[in-house]
Length: 161
Image (cartoon, one colour):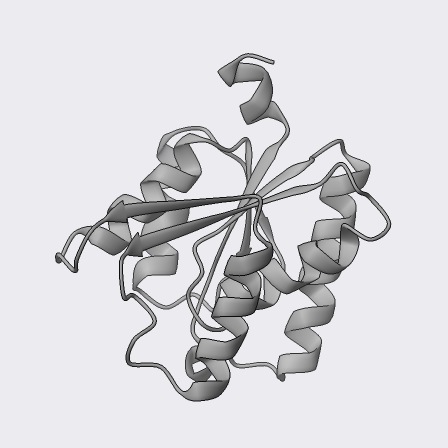
């Protein structure tokens, strides 16, 4: 498969951290699962998670769960920089490491933190996708920037919130 064909079957995620979401966690996970199942039905086989705690990790875990029924699925972990998770709680770190260890490919964009790392990670994901699944509450920030970038690049956004 060439890069364009790969992109046609590739979907990425964007979404807020849990403290910014205005709906209960179980409901967001349910909506993410529905959006992922729809993407699978639509022929998507590669999913990219930006690996941030909250929506990204929840989506990654859902994709890994779906792999049990769809072994052709692949999960790519797009990590903005080494040590990205170092300041998180033990619970989020454990989830991160579990998903990272089961990912089919890990792409680390930078060896250490830099101010542009998050936006570059988001652009990297969108540039390799033909659909974005977003959990978006309407507020400015990284999720909105990712949606704006996707729209500018002509990549459709499906809202799971």
